[in-house]
Length: 91
Image (cartoon, rainbow, N blue to C red; front, side):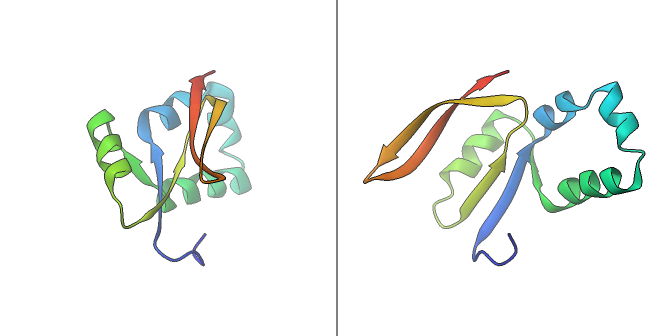
């Protein structure tokens, strides 16, 4: 990801926190899994609330990768033969 120019990475704080179960928190005690989880937390900016999410989406001069948790794609939206968006549904 670091090789992509002007890419900003995000994840939604509430989704990330909701995805943590007792089992996953125990699993994070494993050094490798814990490091991977910490890398995610350190590398992705957290989106705090809906207004912040809309602000991120409106930024025109940056490429965005928003990591979503507990969501499944239901529809792909195309524009000029390219994927322009994805509709997600809570799992």
